[in-house]
Length: 197
Image 1 (cartoon, rainbow, N blue to C red):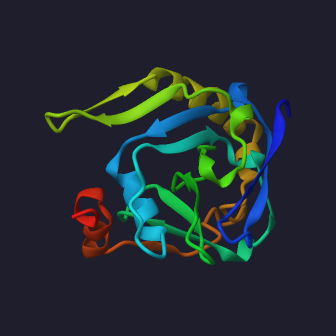
Image 2: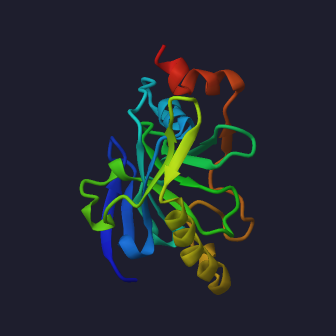
């Protein structure tokens, strides 16, 4: 794997590991302004802290993620019954990764505030869901994000490296932790507009 090994850890340090061989070429830095990403951080936070937009992510493949300790503290929730999976540290609430619900599409988005130095991941290439005054949103560099996903997920599917994931059991394809789905009230309380009012 080309690139550098980048350490990560949760707020209290119980969960820590390494992003292996990461670089701007094998992933994509994205700033996401959507309410869902901010709601996830708010829900996971012990004190309900509402993060400033955007949420900083690095999109890569799960085979690059290695947990060295604290994997038993890894918990997962979803904002809706069919929504993406949001993995966090049960011990302190720190958001760690987002994944899709099915591991055959090799995708993981890393919360970049979990590493002390994100410089090796290169510049931000995508800005997603930028809110406009009229209530709609726009994105910049979305094509780059899609191309990056396809460039890495398709070979992973063909070669079988999609099975190398710390988030799913390779035999059952079920998540390694039970998914908690937020209630409508929990989701409403975590949305930035509700949480900040």
